[in-house]
Image (cartoon, rainbow, N blue to C red; front, side):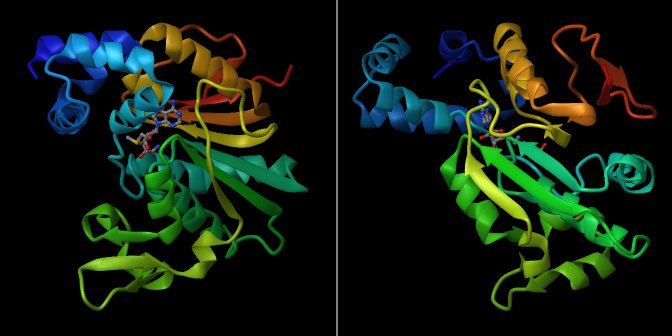
Length: 267
Ligand SMILES: C[S@@+](CC[C@H](N)C(=O)[O-])C[C@H]1O[C@@H](n2cnc3c(N)ncnc32)[C@H](O)[C@@H]1O
């Protein structure tokens, strides 16, 4: 498949070329295989199949997902979260803290959050109850997230002492499995970000490196609108460090020092 055909596919879904440009090699490979299985010789034939069958379309959508992630991606942000943002939140949230990792892929982000939260227990006698929801469109990634087994590469930003505290090293391979403390209070669930949010009143929402990177503006706006409905007043929205919001939101205020962290106005 050449780039022109690939762009045809992206246009069909309203996905963004700039989002997919760097990762297109792997995605094209998966789509080529799918086209071959369906007996499609060119993109026009493939797009016609996608229009004819909801199931085929869904298969294609899943093949277009990209699961690249790692623990503590954007390292400095996690430091700010631990030292400033969560302590500020804990000044006024006493009952329960609700967190949503939207488009969580294989769980690196959500377990990074859990490591930070567990660390806070040193400074707080009574942390509020925590509820973490981690969602993704792709059930295969969610299965991997539930299993919680990671390569050394995914953990390269995790300090050695935290690796020994929260992971078991697997004997046979250079892999690490999470200890049960990290899985506690985390629920994984399938959810499609263009549909209604899977909960309400979240104190922190991670919407990083998914729809705001891979979708065109109209879809980004729809997804963002849905997500923000479920953010509690004063709650935090965290997007990817290379991402921007598709439109000005007067209900969101940037939280220094990271331009990709926002607080919802308490109206
Ligand atoms: C590159 S990963 C990002 C993982 C993590 N948030 C991070 O920043 O490291 C993108 C994830 O978003 C998911 N995704 C993409 N579009 C989605 C949608 N419309 N609804 C739900 N999940 C979606 C993909 O399946 C993939 O697992």
